[in-house]
Length: 118
Length: 113
Image (cartoon, rainbow over all chains, first blue to last red; front, side):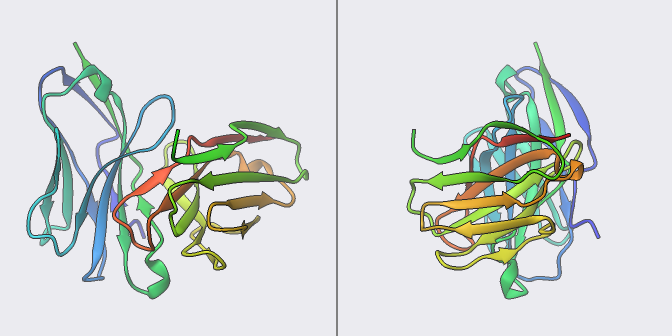
């Protein structure tokens, strides 16, 4: 079963506007971590932000914030003031902690392609 | 530059050939991972190593073997390449098992013909 669902295959956003990328996840593990990565056309994977399941506050990193709604199992990424350089594929990922050998495994969604237009 | 270094960056193999993808990190990380990325899909875990001396299967281990040579290096071997193994391969590392950030290498684009 798909653990991470990203329902938006692609999005266009105008420069300087905010954009929200959706991510829902499925786990019965009480302790887990949620990640967002950016993959530009050059192919590298760039870590953006992390949210732990027990973190009380939503994570923020510069222009990136994670809208964590635990009861809805939702971890949407918000990019404020979009820039042309934000054009990339964005992946949501989750790591569970049980069974014990799950701890090292990141599970990724299919990604959302974001295109920022002038 | 510090980080995760993968070699080679590109490779074309014939079906049945073998090869080893190399990965090294200089961040003193404990955990290392190998993922593959196929078109239209996110990354899927092949194998990982929580610490030096240990390796474990991920989601798609069939057709691959790994070696954690030392704390820095984690190699992925294809013994008999198949067209289904055409993919982009990423190595990653994190400070400890379950660290809050995983750093990725630049990827290896492998084509099996």
